[in-house]
Amino acid sequence: MKPPQYDPERAVIPSPSQLRDIRSAGDDRFLLIADLIRGCGMRNGETFAVNINNLVASDVYRITKQVSQTTKTYGRLKHRKPSDYRDVPLRARIRETIEWYADKHGTVDGYLLRHPMDPTRPFLAYYLQNQWQRIKRAGEVDVPDGMVIYSLRHFFASNCLTNGIPITDVAEWMGHKSLDITFKIYRHLMPGSIGKAVKILDIGLAA
Image (tube, rainbow, N blue to C red; front, side, top):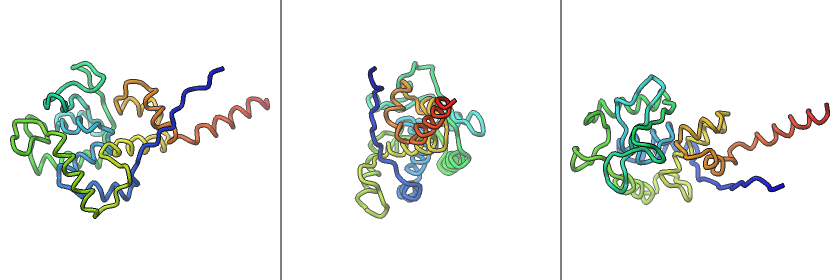
């Protein structure tokens, strides 16, 4: 019998206290992006395309587009057809951040984030990366070794899985191509599942 393939990759995940400091260390755009990634599990490019019209329910955000690093324009989601979308849970706190940002900075065709020098163009990744590097160099907040902006997405997955949300739901919300990807990255966040299985199997064998 061949053993199952298990890649115990460890993602760098900030603590809640570190995350609180990190999200407020930059400008309003950085705070919005950080909240969308940590609260909704979005990819970086998906946050750049956040649109006020995608608040489809009080507790649901619909991810429909991302900003492509290659074309610098709005495009289809990763691993999806152009018409595809995915709905993700929207915490009240994250909805408040979206509405606060829209009220303060306005929108263009519903889009919240735009090119700082040209509001007719989408927001681009290097503006986020430049700000992240400045935050790290300043040394005013505790940034874990090896942490990148994408680590906030790991925080979302960790928060879901350690609180008992099924990994199938987490995989769907994060937009992974397959459940295998989610399992290989985040299996270690569910240590209780093995112990629980052993207890159940022991009961069955004793019967």
